[in-house]
Image (cartoon, rainbow, N blue to C red):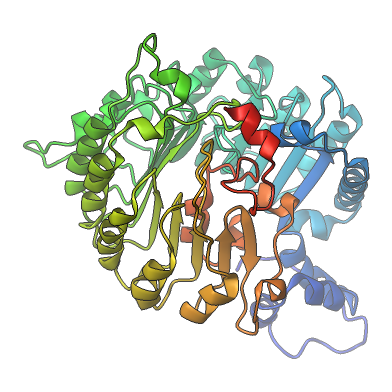
Length: 544
């Protein structure tokens, strides 16, 4: 490691080991132990700072989601506590050179319902940024405050250096500061924890400005995420040769995506969330003289927008044909049997539209059977996610057969929507044969559907008994940290709502598990039965 740490011998004794060994030793300590050892001497303070302050998160204001507004949640104490802590951290960064030099990743959540708010906080961030000499990742996730121009200028002054930038608010003036940033590898305009069904906080992106940024000579850009609105209005064709990851949320009709995919020979990861259909796969589902397109693809996340009851009326201009979509997906997967991660879901475009699903009007057994047949041929999966539509009990055999072919290397599984089918046979007969399975997400509800005869989920203790290597379980919308000594659900600590909303890779047992839950909105509303937490009978009365 190339770390310049000044050794100060407060006790008159030199550290008995070289610096590299101490860095290795301290890398195994948790945050509490690192904080304690940092108080023992200046040497240990400097070394521990490399780990304690490597990834910093500042929170100003309060993210009041649409779910919160429906419940009229008010938590001013949390807002005040977060803001005070963040200001203390900024003060520490401005006065301690060692700590400022240790920061490699900075995430700022700046939420306010008042435009031009948080001026004082933004002023401090602007003056601290130039001192973060080791900064490599910067994420600005905000409500009304788009990225302030002064912060954008300070960010540009750090070049070359910053390689990862996430901005969910960007105006024309700030966008100009991003032109031609040679060191930029990752540019995200969508927060991975913000499912496209919950566009809150509101974001501000001018498609003309974004298009200018993308075509300003970002020759090393490898990863990009953006909304369907932007994807249909900016030119990403010039990035086809360099992009290895592409994420489109709220994809809609995916205008122009098929043209991009035919040229994206370097693409490794593709996520298309809330799309109307899979027509964009048609052009890359056949092989040509030079082989088939997307030959390097390893990760595929596809989410179809759930059909709502109103969309199935006679006046609806886009009739849904799930059978055609399933066949299109099967043709594509037949060319990519070596996928490492695959996630297929059917979810609402908006969770809070107050409308019911129209799934009962489709022959789900036929089209979903085609999807399961295609999944059965994927032979190298480390992560698999499947959203199950409304199905009869007889379809359990098809689900079991598909999961039975999962390779022993699989470490993460998401299986949601099974309300009328018990999970016990799948876990006892199939998933228990996966020796490395450390994350499992299961649910017995489907968004916007009222289910009378739903089958309860296995307890977390049952999951641990059948899956001894399990470390994290998502039970409907509740995350449990699993440990071997647990006997029942009460023994397993559950995540707070704040941790769920701001989840990071380090919260999961593997990157594969985080990938399954990225770009997915986790909500406790519209559960399937009165025994589920968060279900209110009035919710369904309003929905239908």
